[in-house]
Length: 115
Image (tube, rainbow, N blue to C red; front, top):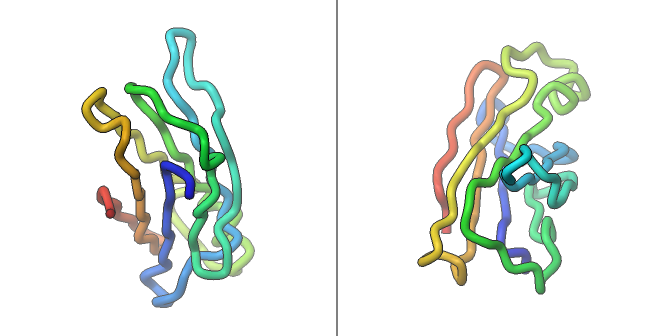
């Protein structure tokens, strides 16, 4: 399994947000470098965002969720066109798994470090 996984739930419908595009980047000295991208499955998850053997290094990371395209497909109005979740991985956490859930609605969102 990827060292980083996500699960997106649409709290306004109580259902997983499927086919939602996500991009993962790592901050470098020259800016953000793309590491991976993918779309959530029918359960709102991406379990294979990174290759199983890809080991993250300490630093800052950003996951960008394309909310606009998702809600456009649902033919629903929204306020936020995308959600960026920026998080840090410390040296002491390099062997950890990182689950980044997103609870989404057309006019709000929340996130937390999952397990």
